[in-house]
Length: 355
Length: 163
Length: 100
Image (cartoon, rainbow over the protein chains, first blue to last red):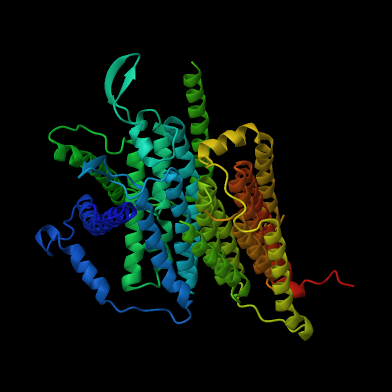
């Protein structure tokens, strides 16, 4: 490694991490579609994809080939630049927010310490929110540029929903920030190591933030589902209400990009829920050094998988909100509950730190 | 590091010219968003990490969404060039260039390049800004919260169909 | 490190471009966006000075400028909507009913 300079080595390691994360993310998104179809099918007492490969495991590959080969139809009066920009913008932003998510502990190899995170910003959490805020544009511009009634209405409704629930998302996290004292995601996870000790007695409950911020978690997860436009908040793209919502006029690859960015957003939000409330990669760790490095990664992915399964479970179970019910819920219920959570948490934190 | 500043400064100037020169308001709005994001990167390079992220979240992510909504709802189409005085039309660009050169000259006189070295590295994290905000600047903070409330009420009243 | 003069030069350039747009453009929403451009140029100057004087107050001022710009954009756009509803035009040359 002496032939590389310090910055050169850093660049090489970062590029490798980016490549690994992108490959893993794409595979996860593809198999998330398979998982969704299978789970929803079993909830509805049918099989789901069964024929393409064993238990339909090659279905995502078949879907990918289909998307590549489909005819790309562009509406006549569509605004060409923005019509092409919107899905790529959405997808880029969805990938960008993965850059600050820590997946596991750091390990040392050949004297260099490498962490399972592309970069650790000390305003990491705000960075994720910034990228989410910009993601609203992809939906708005897609709806407007299609130059058609259904996409415009769907796009405007969807973006209004997203900006409304962004507020509750931010407020829900403030409680966690007060406890952790840092905006760096790795710092927040590091604060959740160990167990809760009540009055000197070890309760064997993990030191996760969910036990001190249950209301915060509920507000966060509800707002996250609304942010990612999933059932029960998926009116803007519900088939029976608005044809296809903002992606009605899109076909083949651009349509696939919208779907991939929706799943990537789901993954990001679930990663954040794991990191903020469920202790990130903390879990029982034992064995030789190689195992000690892989096990935190495994615990992180297991918790992430639980959240994704919960998302899909809700899709198969719940009906969707009407739009005015959705907006009323976001502004008149979730926002005040978030603010009250902050008030209560700040009182408790001030009382504890003064005593 | 320093070359990044010049890259994003150039991007900001191109975006600004695009805001002013585009005929369609939607393209102007998108150029303004590009400008806001490149300025956020410049703030990051100047050590203001919290303000950079706040700029993206609030300015590019909320205020500009408002602009884009209004442009889409009012269906603002391409702007037709006006047919006013020909003389003023040709006098415009040279006067702007003269104004720019004059102010740049004044700035250069005051701060010759290379004379101002940055002070010791500043801790501009959220904690430091929070300390300052809630101690020295708590009154402006509370006043701006009332200002925002008044703005919300004003907007609701102004944009209503019937009062 | 970037010299202060370069940061200020960028700020001044953006401000003059915004001012030129404010004077020359006819669509009222574009004029409003040029106002936001000028505000951002000033924000950049504040951040530049905050860096070079080692004082965090400049960044705090930028925070307040952003909040006030948000409030101003809200009310301004509401006025534009009300104006469009009454006059059905977004061209500032047609809004001349107070002329002599």
